[in-house]
Amino acid sequence: MPVETENLLFCELQLGPVRLKNRLVMAPMTRCRAGEGHFPTALLTRP
Image (tube, rainbow, N blue to C red):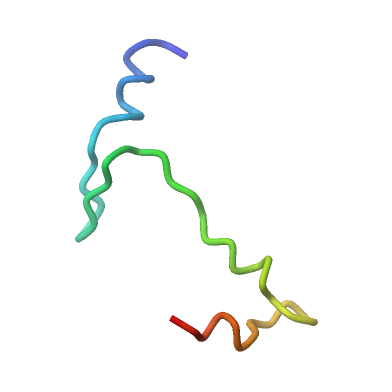
């Protein structure tokens, strides 16, 4: 990976109302907690 690209990964980014410290993000893992038929369970409704 070129050096310029590596440096961009660790720069702050404003994404709508959210300020990210870097550009490395992880997608929500809600599918791991889905029940039969891939529907959300009560676990997902808790804060």
